[in-house]
Image 1 (cartoon, rainbow, N blue to C red):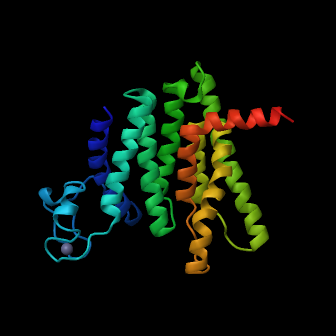
Image 2 (cartoon, rainbow, N blue to C red; image 1 turned 180 degrees about the horizontal axis):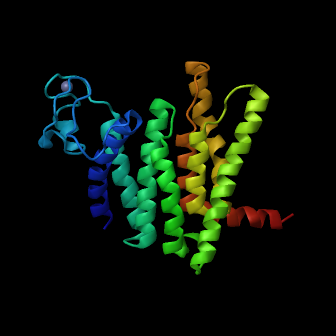
Amino acid sequence: MAGIAFLLGLFVGSFLNVCIWRLPREEQVVRGRSRCPACGQTIRWHDNIPIASFLWLRGRCRACRAPIHWRYPAVELLTGLALAAVALRWGVSGPGLVYAVLLCALIVASFIDAAEQIIPDVITRPGLGLAIAASAAWPVVHGVAGRLEAVGQSLLGAAVGSGAIWLMGLIGRWLFKKEAMGGGDVKLMAMLGALLGWPRILLTFLLAPMLGSLVGIPMKLRRGDELIPYGPFLSLAAVIALWWGDGLIAWYVRQLGGF
Ligand SMILES: [Zn+2]
């Protein structure tokens, strides 16, 4: 099953690459053949096979020999691994489908944020709606049995997630007298909170700056005062919270009980 999910993920990843390139440019994602960004040549289907074509073409466009960005095979591989990991953990189930869609959305949002410093609303707005709908459809994602209770947890999670990061942005603006947190991050946290619930979105909120400082400090030293996109760190923190959050929170609560 994980193998099938991996193969499917490679092809899904190929579509996510199209989204990463076209969404910030407000181009259609479903219409229009893929083209080489350097020479505009339409890419033939046999040169568009995930990973394999990149290796076969030795990372260059067949027409103009321009290097193909490493992001293309990386996103395909990452999506394959993500869907395989979801299949191993949740199998073919409602929650499995929900988390597969979530990981795809996070991959697209993270790569766009890293390249363009924006998280398009076209991901996070429908994402928030889908997260609330998924909570009603599969209350088990919030660890409860009732649909109404699950929707309540979902709305609370969205409010806590977006509220926490909004407040952090407000404090950051007051301290540093400049924009610290974009509106895209607030909407991303609303979407994530709606699916993770308030305890795990708070964990996400706390983990993200730790992950950010691991990468951000060396990047800051190398590139100076450039704005570091926060979306990828929020996304990675959310994935950690989704996979291990319940265990981490239970462990933390036990530590508190020891005092
Ligand atoms: Zn080309």
